[in-house]
Image (cartoon, rainbow, N blue to C red; front, side, top):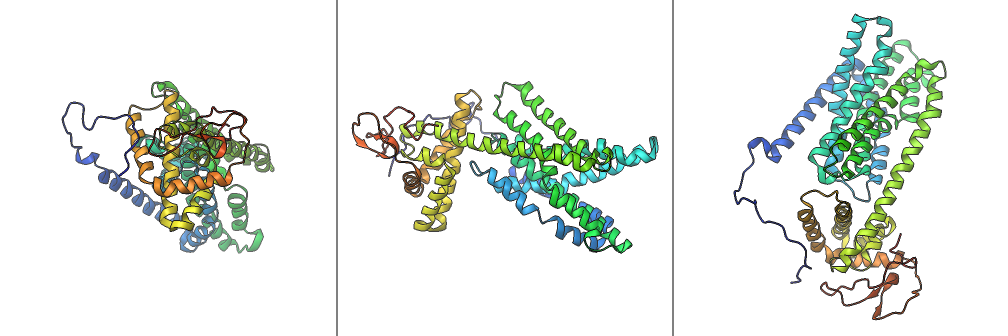
Length: 447
């Protein structure tokens, strides 16, 4: 049986030697059960409210039309999260919170606030104030609650900007899904009364504006909050002010963008198109560039941090390069699937995720931003990699050889020439080589 390469140890139990059992309300199944019950109850209530306003037929029509952009948006956010994919349970929670809890809070609070404004001020301005002031504050706060909950209680899965973007975007996608059912169902009911059909109907116009032109509107607003929490996740624990003010600033920016979008109809006949063309599309393009740049930066971090574990014998020499390339990762999974079936491909995918988490953990540690459990978490990740090495290592080495360019070595070679410009020595690990050549411009591991 192979032995582990050396790594730091951590205490096996409580420091004071006393084993403390959690209270019943602190147990995981109690928290999960309470959360599921809350979301289920919110879903039933929001279902009843929407159906009451749209009618059964309008609800079904709205549901069928509102669901169309959801798979595309979820797939886009999961694609952004491919470098270090978060667990599906976080995605399901975010969508359910947006579609059920946040939507319920928004409907109840917006309705109450609009009626209160109508009774205390000019009734003709109640709807405008509700749409441009109350709705952005209520809706963005309700959606931000999901990001906050993941940030606080799933901290290991929330490590940077991309995680914030994904959680916020999926939450907003769920919220927009429920809101679109309401708007489309109501529009269908209006058409039933007026007898309008075809492209001139209110339903067609609503579908074009909300589903075709701006399915990204709610995700774009809430992603500002997610970016704020992502920056907070990258900050050191001692930077308390920054960890509070940056998410708050992101939330305020989300509210401001939402208010501008809702108020576009007050800017004249072409106000909506003016805001859409001069603000929404550029903001969407800038955000798209930011998240793709952040994703490439994460891959570069993987390539820069993992060679330290090659030296210690935990990883093979070609793995940092393969793990730092999405193309090589896909090749490794395909190789494993071809030779070992779906279980092998799944093991390689898990290996890639754990290795990426390890690289990010080391990156935070070098910058003084890791938590007190750094050593414990590092040991857990290394153990997960070690348990999957027999299936993952051949696939990753194959992917590294197949995807890396052949580069001439400009220095004297001592020992055995390895792939990717490395010279392999015996290595401190159990039978693995390690890079003995400094990083240079000729080394494909260098970025």
